[in-house]
Amino acid sequence: MVFGTCNVANVTIPSGSGGTSTDQTCGLGIGSCASNECCSLAGYCGTTEEYCRAPDCQFAYGPACDANKVPSGTNTSSIARTALGSVLYGSTGIYDCVNAGDMALTFDDGPYIYTSHILDVLDKYNAKATFFITGNNNAKGAIDDTTLAWPALIKRMYTSGHQIASHTWSHADLCSITSAQRKNEMYKNEMAIRNILGVIPTYMRPPYSSCTAECGCEADLQELGYHITYFSLDTSDYLNDSPTLISNSQTIFSNAISNSNPATDEFLVIAHDIHNQTSEVLVEYILKSATEKGYKPVTVGTCLGDDQKNWYRVDAGSVLGG
Image: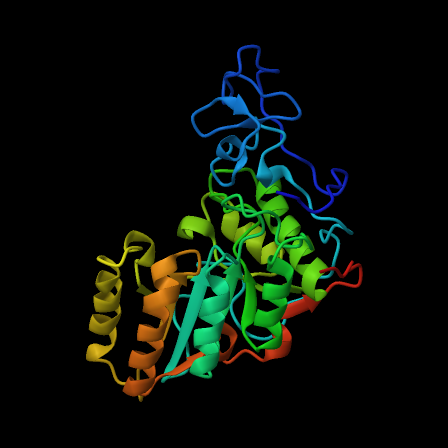
């Protein structure tokens, strides 16, 4: 994989403790790998995808972990983060839409090889969605790497009227890392999205829904000017990615909306665009069922009554690419 240019001076790469490993093992209390190596989830140093892919690679002990890659261009840490609009920032987060009849369909973890087909299906139904983008996970390469498909795909999302939001740089558990590391996860994803679109999002979703006041995450994300966005309907598609199991996710969805009324009800739905069966089966099922029931598929911002101009911040230091 070819990654975007690394500029280590932009964002501090976390370092582990215990010195450099002498026996190719790594991790807490053991030590770090060499500068060109990654520390696998199992605690071994290596250089292949198995060792380096995020979020599994222990980035505090593997300098070459994908999570430690840094997008090119100016760091976003110093940009103004004025509150835009009236939607809740930080705090305990957002779980529901405010407009009856709206269904906000959201996708986490992409873009990936299945995302393009999902966009085709959304176009077919004239539906809008929100994509919570992860910058460099699952060994897909950095989203702003112009040798890969991701920049063009993200531009297609954006120009088609879908909402671009952040799902962190490497899909780290935000309550399992330090405040500085948490902010770096957000800055690096901002930089990559900025490199593609010239803007950074104001909406985000924490990986694993892990962001509490106790760990300091809520305060950090409020400081960074983010709307922490969760969901009210979990399709559990990540548990059902096979032709024989995807009907479970269809049933979850149909059961949730069967006794609902679009005159009074709304839904904030989570799925993942990294799964084949979500792309091939579930998305069309959701859109067909929702529209037949009378729901309007919209972005998160729309379902919260937030003006589109509030969904992004313009970064004057942008380095547009791809």
